[in-house]
Amino acid sequence: FARSKSPAPAPQSVSQAVAAINRALAGHSRGIEFSIDPDTHQTVVRIRDLQTKEVIRQIPSEEALAIARTIESVQGVILRQQA
Image 1 (spheres, one colour):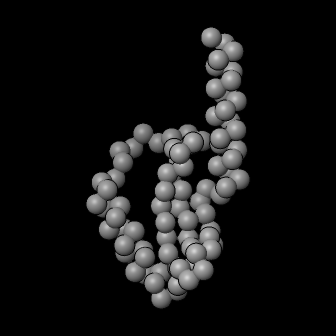
Image 2: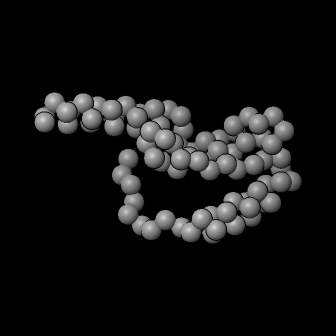
Image 3: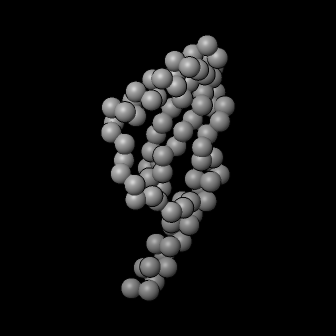
């Protein structure tokens, strides 16, 4: 999972974009949630049903995040063994 070197968007513009998306999804009883995975530092986007709080879709998936965590863990072990 390569990380892009592009500059991060301003927090205000992200908030405005999320608010616009939430307004568009409001009629569909859907909400969008952005977070940062603490282990991989990847942005995680979840689409939730606002009534049940059920996650309808998550990008990247939990499986992809688990793979990324495992890869980072293995890389850490290899680096420690080489030192």
